[in-house]
Amino acid sequence: MPATGLSVVVAMDKFRSTATAAELAQSIVDHGGAGVTFDVVELSDGGEGFRATFDGEVVTLRVRGPWGDYHDAPMTLVRRGPDVLGVIEVAEIIGRSHQSAPTSAQALAASSAGVGDAILASARWGVTRVVVGCGGSATSDGGAGCYDVLREHAAAPVALTAATDVDADYLGALRYAPQKGVDDEDLAVVARRLEDLATRFERDGGPDVRRVARAGAAGGLGGALFARGADLVSGFDETAALTALRARLATAAAVITGEGRLDAGSLEGKVVAGVCALTAASQRVLVVCGSLEGEAARALRRRYPWVRVVDLVSRVGERRAFEDTARAVGELTAQFLAGAD
Image 1 (cartoon, rainbow, N blue to C red):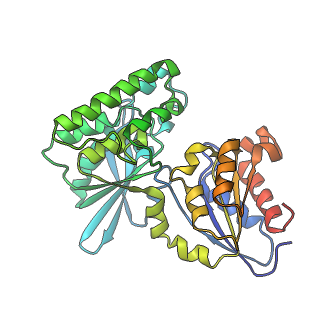
Image 2 (cartoon, one colour):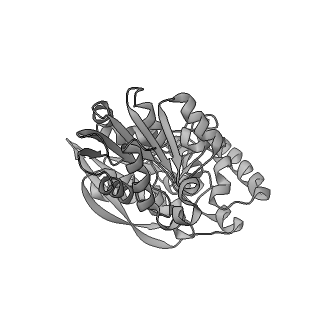
């Protein structure tokens, strides 16, 4: 059994396609046992779930999906003094949920124009700044679709902030293209596209985005937004500040975080690495993931030797890891809290 009075911060990311962060957190709490005090923190790295971490009025915008189909996407209005933030999420506008297994041709054709639609539409709600959660996109268009929509106006109708889930530079967007369905033999198309667009941004009087950190987020959308005057910030840092994460972690005896797949990308501005960076050797810290890349797990432990990393696939098998994710996470974290893991 866990020690009586044990204080635990639960700061989970989603396990894509198998469990939401809220479902995972609830299972951890349900399996925690008597005598444990849980503090559940809702976080996002700029990808799925980013908008939901903001409290405010939710309105809908008519936008294009990645393949041109119009649909309604939510925007959260956050009032801060005289300013009104409009928070949108790329995953809800041009996300991968629009097509579960696109062909390489479809992946190459996916457009970010819908994000431009949302930014333009936000002005009708009195928004003074749009905060774009840049993660989970289906696109590798370098942000061209969004850029073209915004370029029709002399300037963006509102101020822009792009909150990104990776710190890759603009040309670094290439390495994420296979995750979106682009075949290896078509990666040269994406590489040429990024170079050509970077040149075009400069020709239009914008900055050189090629080596700008975070410009590679959402298939290069971060770079296109930067070329239109956006600030580029860490999505994790935005939600960590919003939720006072540092202060909440400081009083915890144990911390539980995790994500669906721990890999090299996890160390680039994702929730898990961000949470671990705010913990201390005096705390018990668990990272629980669906599966892991061995070198990424070793790199995380080298940075933070006090962190324990476990994965569902090796503990409960691949089938249960995917079909009974939340319960399996709850059981593993209960073992950790009881000192049996």
